[in-house]
Length: 89
Image (cartoon, rainbow, N blue to C red; front, side, top):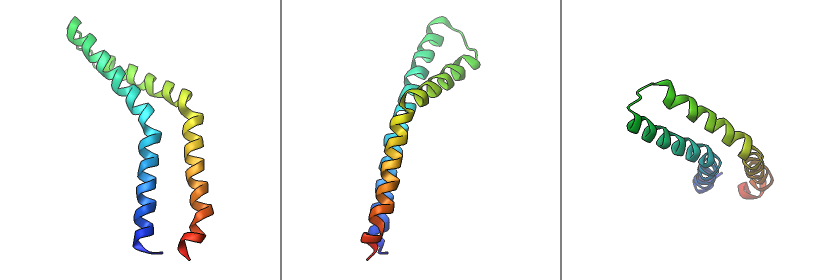
């Protein structure tokens, strides 16, 4: 196994991680921004108000995008297991 192959597999793995985590991070960011704007306009400084909606948004993102994320990860790992013997030799 050459160093180039390891670097290429690492790059592919990082891209899969970024693609799979993007919906959860995006929804968490949007909800966090909306809650921050709401807190700034109403002068409510309750700490739990900032975390609970973000947690709920991430769970909703997992429920909505879960099958898609699972498909992306299964395709990535199956391509690694199918192509790795050909790449090594």
